Length: 373
Image: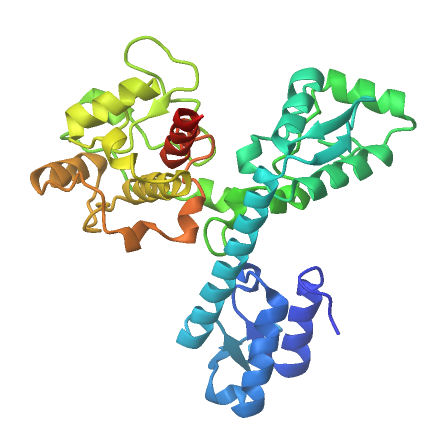
């Protein structure tokens, strides 16, 4: 018996040593327990050697090869299983995030002062940030917030620094250390906290580190101007390099198609004039969640170099925009393409565009109600 995923390494070793069996890319599986239960049932009906691939490896390095069975996503049935488990996990995370966002009855004592807080989790995190300078991340990027706070509280009560995990003799010394070293934040290298950040559920089998380190396909093009050469795609989680051509705007909003950034109103006007994409008109009949999914879908497609409308792949941003302009593809794609649960998750962390979306249907309902009253 193994406790998964905590004992994944021991489990993998056991499979290899005792059964000459290996599961490829085990760390990419969303739910190891369900994955193993599925294949245990399948192997009762059909032997593994009829399903799995075979591989010869030199396990001891002495030239003696061992024949092992390998299970991985290169097998269509296994690939589908992994995708299904990932999608179910994503829906579970999304449901939890929506519940946390809508819950107004959150109550908890502050981690760093005597305040007994009541309200919503976002306001609690804002309190930690503004009054105590404890930076845990933007509320919209966090999930399982209660467990996150419990984890932080346990670490602090055990007199361990939140950032460096160093042990101190008493609370006073710990507080002084965290204040002087500016350690009132989570260490991005500390994988214990990965499960609390939505970005780690965005792509199957990838955490934010892998996404961030992916190579940029938009290599320098000799035909581009110097200004175009200086514009690079921003890595996930960091839009600090975005600057406006004119006056700097706090928390600038970035165009869905090109790299212009400014205020939300100016960007809407820019998209309408430069790209013929009137987001104000397009979104008027959409509720908040459909707007979110549409924006995230377009962001993802453009980031990947795909036309949002026809999915054609272009080698760089300039050619993508030329294609969309020539083919008049600055229009809303078919709903089945973007009305998917995966597009509840933002392509870029701290996407300011999402912060300005309104639920027009709720606004109309309130307006109608006010007229009746």
